Length: 257
Ligand SMILES: Nc1ncnc2c1ncn2[C@@H]1O[C@H](COP(=O)(O)OP(=O)(O)OP(=O)(O)O)[C@@H](O)[C@H]1O
Image (cartoon, rainbow, N blue to C red; front, side, top):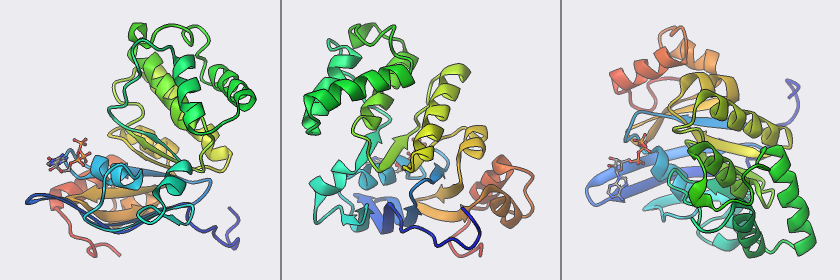
């Protein structure tokens, strides 16, 4: 974006998002936004609250308090409208074992209300772009982890949503499959999608993200472009060092300007 171009309004935003599970505070007042054409990475140690936050943002978990907006639509007030604008890949997305990826996409495409002609064209496009031709018509039970993940990604991309929320999209994939999915996410960004994803792979986050939100104990402890994050983390040499700086220090919000 040119330096003085006006910033587009966020396609996804979270305001003071909180989730309690009994006495556990999983998310403790999360503020976050993603603009169209932007990839934001959510990074944090195990148990930091990433999955809980992403599930609230995707409208499948009700926040204890706080507000989520997708494309300006309030998730609590107009959930169906808000959810129609997003594609969600959860960490535990399962395919129907007996359905092939193509049949799975047909099923979800109809739920999204795509016309049969549009659905057929869109599935052909995804099978081509995500290189699924060799397994698109096999039962999902017979697919490898990488093939299943491509099918899950296709499901999230299917209705061409403005917003993509992807929980560890490359988890458990080999380098080649992981890189393929990362490149697919970059192509979605080029189409103007707003993308929020979580990962534990620092190199992937550095390569893919326009901004990173570091989350620790349910709060964003710093947020921004990698060089700025490193500078604020005591001159960290890379994202891993910046991450460790915050986690080891157990920093509270407001510690970094
Ligand atoms: N259904 C639940 N019931 C009770 N506690 C939960 C539940 N889900 C998550 N938690 C707790 O909330 C906190 C945040 O968990 P969450 O899964 O959001 O973290 P995460 O950052 O995604 O972790 P990881 O990187 O290990 O996937 C943890 O302390 C976890 O034990």
